[in-house]
Image (spheres, helix red, strand yellow):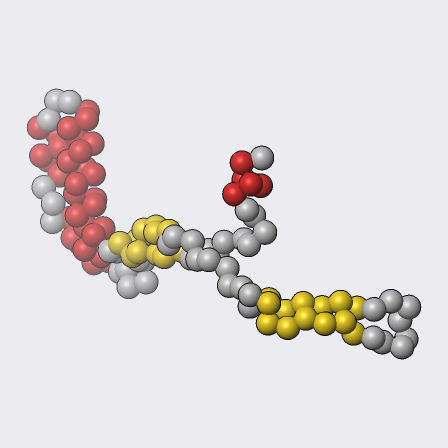
Length: 106
């Protein structure tokens, strides 16, 4: 844990400097994941032409607003999944070594 330690004696200072070099590594925390759409290769004209291929009149055949929204959502998600797929984002955050379990519970 302690690699080296000592006391530095500088003649220009009125005190002795104490130093300590630790070789302790911070433990890694768990990875966090998030998803977002990847619009890097998104083409608006292709997206609009694919949306035009759906039969939008089928939405009017449903009586319930919930069913209409479900059909609309499935059309839009199907087209978005084709043109702007989901991308997995990984977040890494190192733990803070001075935050001990005692401090967290206090």
